[in-house]
Length: 126
Image 1 (tube, rainbow, N blue to C red):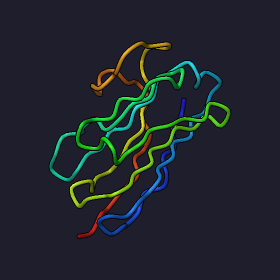
Image 2 (cartoon, rainbow, N blue to C red):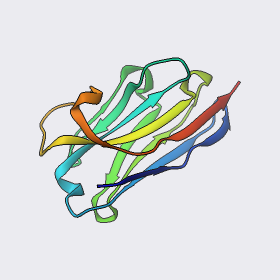
Image 3 (cartoon, rainbow, N blue to C red):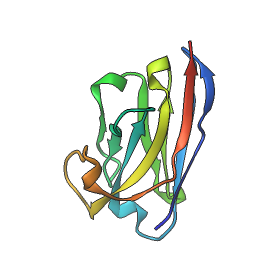
Image 4 (cartoon, rainbow, N blue to C red):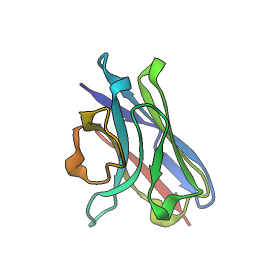
């Protein structure tokens, strides 16, 4: 399984970006997906997740109302739509795949994931 994240860039505060994560393989629709981010000097933190069946999403409180995670199983792709960006959103953003297929409930720990994308840098200027 390979995950390829894209869509990062430089944006002014208040702006928007959409990140994409394309997955290889034929089992994408069986696994929940997550987004994490890591700012310089900080630990990797959970941002949002989406269930394997596209029924449930789990954004962290700090991004609720601003970030939306979605998926297109026909395209083997998960998205993170980000609006109203803030300088504190600056980080490298990673997508990841749940370890367990058909998982029920939120997976918010990096230990819940086995495959990771290479990361895409989001920089929000003030």
